[in-house]
Length: 82
Image 1 (tube, rainbow, N blue to C red):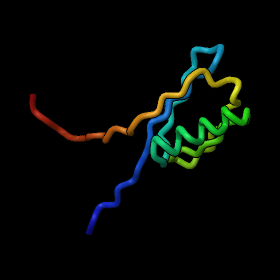
Image 2 (tube, one colour):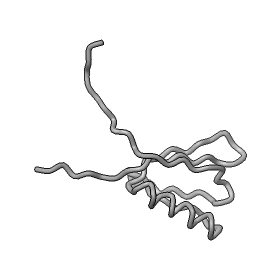
Image 3 (cartoon, rainbow, N blue to C red):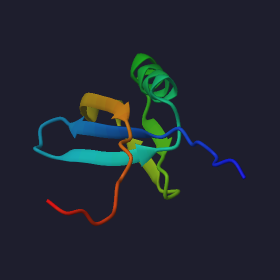
């Protein structure tokens, strides 16, 4: 049985005029996430995304200070000796 590979992207959205960062994991490739963000900014519309838990994310384009997108790191759980 082959393991299905899901593409996820870690996304950090900096909010203007605050020290708040929104951090989410998105079920999409980096290219698709960046294209979605760029389209919202170019059109002057609200950024709308859905994270891996099914939560809807809505951020007004005027409040986006920065976007940081990267590959989601594999979370390793286990025991080891040092």
